[in-house]
Length: 161
Image 1 (cartoon, rainbow, N blue to C red):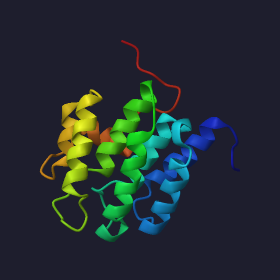
Image 2: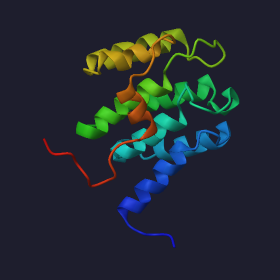
Image 3: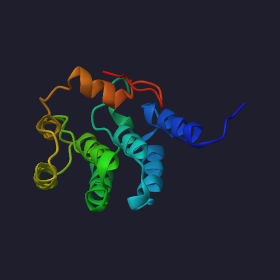
């Protein structure tokens, strides 16, 4: 049975974002669809973009990474989208994942674009360790990996102090 409702819609999108083995062309098409929503993107949709456009994958082969030219197109769009609050936080996260350095020349984005992105992130008060992702030697923390994988509490649950 397929459930309806906002939570089910979000979970379907998250599921799609988690599939690293999706061919690059399908990731590109899905990313374009999401980016076409512009300022209407929700925080979870930025997470999906972060996963679909990720330069560093956990288990998938390099050929499933979207090409640098497509990543550059996504990044240009992401830099222009106005966002606030949680959506902006996740927009910045998506930018860092799509622009992350790999150390593999044919996968990395143009250095000039990477410098422009670093400037944008710094001016947007992005956490420095996210900006550091633009360099290939930067490793993710356990918190970063949880954010990347979406391994957090189920929707609607929060921890109380």
